[in-house]
Length: 476
Ligand SMILES: Nc1ncnc2c1ncn2[C@@H]1O[C@H](COP(=O)(O)OP(=O)(O)OP(=O)(O)O)[C@@H](O)[C@H]1O
Image (cartoon, rainbow, N blue to C red; front, side):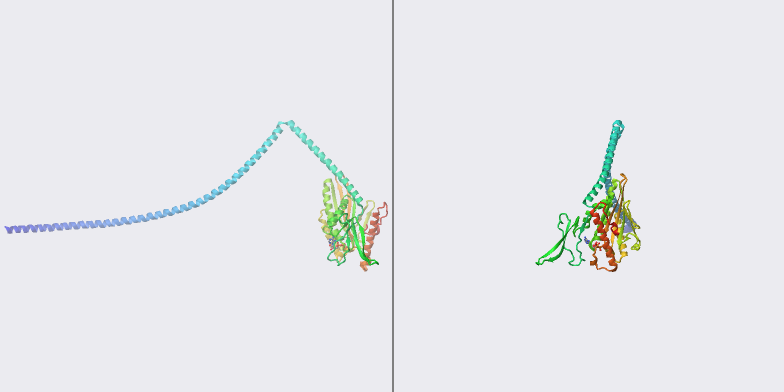
């Protein structure tokens, strides 16, 4: 039994073992299945997780890119906004400026408007006056008309008075000139020049230099008396006026300007320059500020101021030369010098003296006198190798004819101003001249002596007395 029981037990053990083994196998298989299933699930899970991770990282990168891009866009937008802001700032500044200009214009317009309003009010006042009070308006017009007529009459009376006074002034002026003397003699002493020989200057005193300036004293050579005393003889001379070495051409003109005025008033005036060669005659007459240019500009200015008193003047200038007792036209052709003949004609009835075939220039502007002086000087240069020499050996006469007419009073005047630059007055025995020079000197001396006779006869002023006009060309 025990055995049986052991057998049974073994059998049970065996069955149990088989069953355990089968169970273990089943269990192991199941476990293997589960493990495989879990492993598969894990692998799948891993793959999924990786996928998810990949997806997530891809998504993250894209988001970063998007963010960067967005940031970049925002930066660009910011820069654009900054630029826009700058433009806006400039615009605002410009607008402010325009605004200020507009304000200024507005203020100006406001002022103008006020002015306009004032004008409008004034005009309204006028219109009101014109429309409302016909009677007082007519009265005001009548008053105005009367005042205007009075003013016109006063002006006409003043003009008349002025004209009468101008005529009176002419008469009185010329009476004064006659009282001063129809012949006046002035003395001018030129200053010593560097070119003058040493110790050649004469000793001259001007005793009344500070007062009348009419006297001059030339000191003679020193003389020794038998007692041994040395004396210097004084040679006094009296003139209408003495001009010392410091005097200017304007000072000399101051004395003769009244005579120039007389020529404008219809008188014949002659101004001579007489003296040794080199004593300053041409300088006084024809320098830029000499008597000829100053006389022409005074005449021109006076003629212009007389226009308002009705006077119209014509000025005609001629320039002649007397050389060896023959006449030359200094304004003519240079080639005609010493060839073309000219004659002096006297019209006794009209009291007029004319020269045939000479050039006359209308002096309608003072500047024309410069052309005349230049032309005369050129002609003299052509006629002589040295113009200076020619001017020393001949007389020249600048003739200015002044023809005036007053369109209001009907008065007429015709005066002549002769400005004469005489040839140098050398003494024949001092000059030592021979041949052609001797002839020139004789002619000069003859004409100067004739002129002296004429002036002396005129100076004696005897009514109906003989005046030896015809003895030389220059005294004509
Ligand atoms: N007042 C003055 N002041 C300065 N220089 C003068 C004056 N007068 C004359 N002169 C000079 O003296 C020189 C001689 O003068 P100018 O030629 O006028 O003499 P003139 O008497 O006309 O001689 P001529 O008889 O030879 O024509 C010139 O050089 C001139 O410039």
